Length: 115
Length: 115
Image (tube, rainbow over all chains, first blue to last red; front, side, top):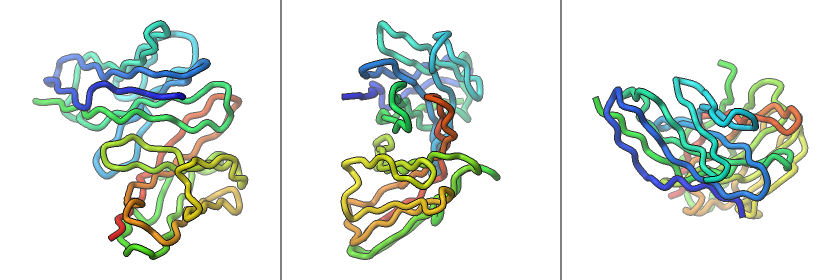
């Protein structure tokens, strides 16, 4: 069965420091991978996705993610964190060989950036 | 604002009552998804439409749940005989299918509380 794991419930980082939010996946076939961010009482906002090609994907608000096929990981990164980055982050996967594919989400990681 | 909209944003109801939620997707998006998100969890897929056709339903979608997208534009999700376990955030997403590549854009959600 397809699944996504976000091993950390919470990540704490100081403003200006680099941040990493971890994600690993388990699928059969080639995955499409996504990161979304959720602010309190709001829906999910799309950050970035990996389809194919370059393993380093750049997205919104200075975020990037690195696809690692051998480690089945898709970690979200940012070189310099901002307090406004504090939010709930979700990793998600869908399958490339299935049309109209539902996203399978991890449980989410709360990012807290302190000033 | 041309994003996905949902109405109402909040709904409090008594157990056994019926509720209906509405989702208006991004204009010209041909796919529309419903997800449910409970506290501390990532969104879970419920059902999806391509134009007006409902093409997939999750096992989470019991027979008390029904969804429609009558003209391939807005969609409604109805829950009959609500139970306390139905309390959750109901998220709608839409996408424009282009081959096997699509990005789902989410609305702000409808938070349901069943007393």
